[in-house]
Image (cartoon, rainbow, N blue to C red):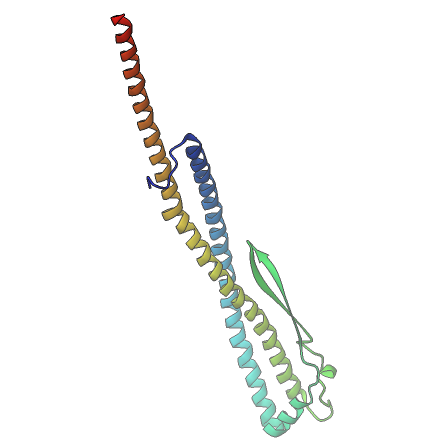
Length: 213
């Protein structure tokens, strides 16, 4: 450290300023990390509920599909499904949580009316309508789950990134700056003692010279 540290009062002031900045940054990063962790667990709870809901809706959807296939036959149900013309429009935007861009997924035309699905009402039955409605309902929750799981992924990445920065300040940067300041103080005190001894020696010499005259 002795080779790369200027042992001046100005350097000590600058080092102390850097310590204060690092400590303030450390405090802010810890606050950010804590907010992100709270948001992560909040969204994770939502995701768990959505997974449970998706499993339930998918079960209902495949049950309804099975009933439609049993009534119309598998080939007929496939032919009816090919008549569906309008695919859902998926719009992905973002929202900002403590600097983390979280996806906000919205779907249009996910849930359709009977007349919007494209197949002939005369050539189908309520069982087809029920199956279509059940899968549309499942798609709605799939979009929500995709949003929350993507949010969880981005949050955990940012939490880990913030944690690394906190640790770097905690265990490397701040201790190094404090050691630097301590070293400068020690050297300044040594220089003051050396200067005091030097002045005292000069004073004694001058006094001896004056006494000899």
